[in-house]
Image (cartoon, rainbow, N blue to C red; front, top):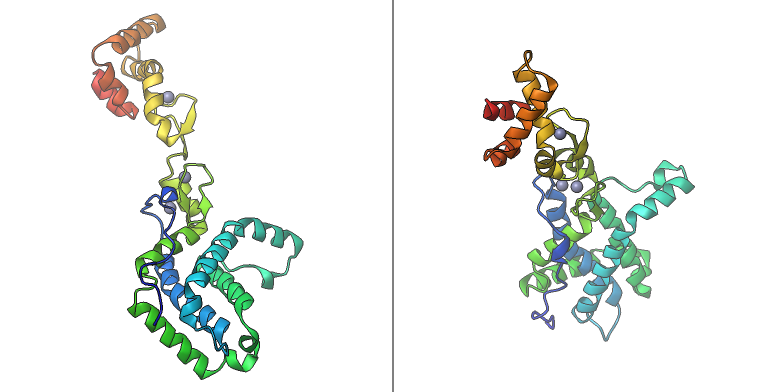
Amino acid sequence: MDLPVANPGPVRDEGQLLQCPYCDSEAMHKLAQFLLPGLAAVCVDGTTGDLFRSPSVVAVDLRQEMVDYITQRSETFIADTLIESEVEQNADNQMPDDPYEVISIFMDDFSRTKRNIIGHVSGWLLSDSREDKIDDFVQEMDMTRFWPLERREGIAEVLLKNVDCEQNCEKRLLRRDMDRHCVTVCPMRPMKCPFGCDSSFPEHNLEEHCSESLQQHLLKVLQVIHKKGFTADQLNDRALELEKSEDRGKLAKARDARSLTNIVK
Ligand SMILES: [Zn+2]
Ligand SMILES: [Zn+2]
Ligand SMILES: [Zn+2]
């Protein structure tokens, strides 16, 4: 057994990842599980019939190569699928929607490039002894913690959350989470002013808007409170007066007309 335990595999790039309660982690765990037999298959196929190299000798290099390969494929995936769907309309050639399946395809492509001559013989690929060798090697890697699950999960997360938010909020997410993210939790989702002035802005600018437009918002609320008996000038003066009062901070914290009205009254 010559797997170097001291090197538990590539670390994910932490910077890009932010937790999103709406994202589905099932695909991530499924993929993390799958990375180990995937690597085992690549190592076994690449060394079959080789008297000088065993799967464990090539595992370190192939793990790095495999992670680099599928990471790179997943990064250009959107560009690739756009081009493909423009060029050919054939539905059979479309990539699956399930990101896990997409990554499986990348891993298959990678393992194909790593097969040696015996690995290319079709009988070998379907043989029981191949399956046994792969199983044995998975167990070996498992026991030596050659590639611990938490490391694989980190890789899987990067692979799956490979799309930048369409509204540029700095989050990276699964493609299929994009729509939901953009209308539910994305801080860049557009919203209209809750006080009914004409502006719309990204949700995370609400606080700023409420502070900047306090006078306008006060005026709208005052017009409702004092339906009659006040001239426009008087309402303006009252709004100005309130804005300059010591309650300004409290007033600016109101996020809708009703709570602002309550404070004014
Ligand atoms: Zn999300
Ligand atoms: Zn976003
Ligand atoms: Zn407003």
